Length: 293
Ligand SMILES: [Ca+2]
Ligand SMILES: [Ca+2]
Ligand SMILES: [Ca+2]
Image (cartoon, rainbow, N blue to C red; front, top):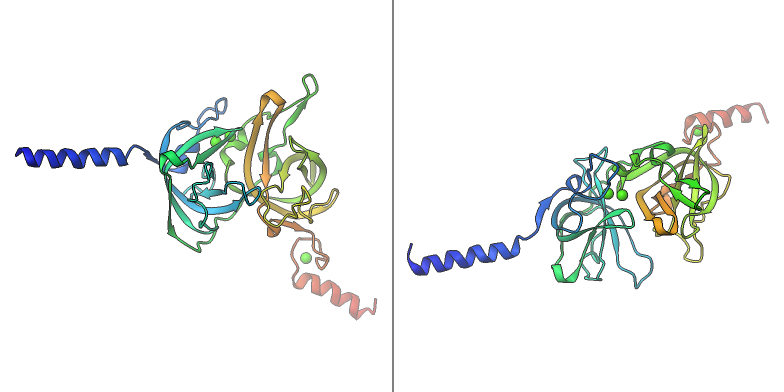
């Protein structure tokens, strides 16, 4: 090889080295753990390119807070298929991203923060979010029972809340739905903003939810206006997040609603109580009408 040719080959190799520091992984690669005694991502504290998926939520605490999104891989519809992404430095890479976009995420820093695996956008890493396609149908929420994402248990000995097992970990960052439930408690969790959902047919099955990421919540209230203690709901949908701060006595999973449509109280027109308003309800009304009642 001529010296000049060698020089240019060396330059090209060097450039490609410097731009491909990050390892390419799927969301599954980032989230899957075989041993639930250690739920940290195998890529914790590493820089990755993530093949990504569909954006299922976008929110921020206030206009000055960083954007957060969740991304779900449609190739992993059952478990280990979702992840939280935060624009930690306010780099702006999430500003124009919308729910329904398919995204590829480059130069993301993997960080276990308060129990949840995050892809953090940090300026010095030159993070990039590429929108591959837009207006995609979101993945269907996985229907789970409250026990699948069970509420924490209370230890009165040290006034702490703890997760009995980590079976819910596989759902972290994924879109989930719980059906036929009642709200049996409020003012739980570290910010007193969690409410307790109980299976209407088996009240011993409970899980925790919160509305802090719900874009339709009035900022003056911790809860969306549809949330009422003692009320029955056809279903409640949200994204699962873990919150862990053991030094303060907290470890729990919570279902985070995204918008008004995620909270479906029983409808007044649903005469038959099956959570659908259809001809059956009309038929019942018709019978009353025919009898003149
Ligand atoms: Ca976790
Ligand atoms: Ca995780
Ligand atoms: Ca009905």
